[in-house]
Every structure is written in C-alpha cells, then in structure tokens.
Image 1 (cartoon, one colour):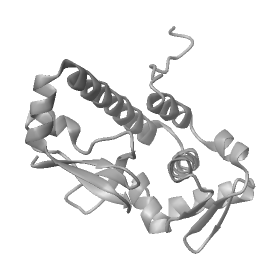
Image 2 (image 1 turned 90 degrees about the vertical axis):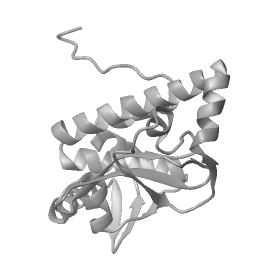
Image 3 (image 1 turned 60 degrees about the horizontal axis):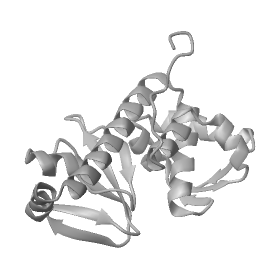
Length: 197
C-alpha cells in the first residue's frame, strides 16, 4: 500500500473479483472510513480492490505517514484499531448475509444503506450494477426489485430507484441493515440465536 484515502463526500467500495470475472462488493465506506486500512497497518498487499462507488471528495495520505502516526500515538492507533474492528464486523456480516439471506432482503439492505449514505430517496443504479454489488445474477436482481416494487417499497424504472415506503423497505431488509447501522454508530454486537444465548 502506497497511499490511503479518507472519503469526505465520496464513497469507496471494497471489491473482490474472481478469475471468471465475477465480482462482489462486500463493503462500502463513507466519511467514517479509511481505504485498505488493515493492509496499510500490516504493510501487506491488499487482497481486494478499492473502487469509487460514488464520486466526490477524498483526501489522500501516504501510507507510511499513517503508519508513523499510528506508531507514535496510542490515541491514533486506538482509533485505527477501532475502525479496523468495525470493518471486520461488517465483513463478517457481509459474508454471512451473502450465504444465508434471500436476495430481496439483501437488495433492500443495499438500497437502504446507499440511501442513508447519500441522504436521498432516489438512487441511480442499473441491474448490472446491483448484480455486481450483490454478487447475484441480473435476473435475480430483477425478480427481487419487482418483488420490492409490488410490496410498494420502491419504484424502479431504467436504472432509477426511488424509495417510496421506507418502513416497508426496512421490513423487507435482512437484519444486517440494523447491524451495520449499529456498527457505524459504535454499538456493534454479535447477533445471537436466542436458543443458544
């Protein structure tokens, strides 16, 4: 890692791409984040690409400067460790979500998170973009979007998605939406099966 990026108004996505060209975005960061932080701090190659999800302002810093600051300040290191922990929680949630949750619930979660970050109910996302972000087929995205549309949660036409009923969309989303919100608010906890608690 030669540089890290601090998004101000931009959003950056960690993207994993496989040899067959398929890719998925397990994590998107905004102002709360630092790109490729774990790779920077450990001085190891980044195992994913960092792509611009939403264009905007970012600050660039040489990775060596961030490592020097972390080594010289326990407070800076603690803050970076907290951010790294949040990323690990979100990555674990993303992996479990992709394996266990139904496509419409995952789509609802993605739309809510994107809307929350942008602060707007209108999103410009094509089926191809949604399929890439979710690691799904376009036909699956289409079926899921039509289901959310039929439930009155969204309006969807030609790459424009409008959240019509936020409560309905929250009800359709998997529990990961609330968990990710808890992480961003510094209130992360491990979801537990009540029968095992």
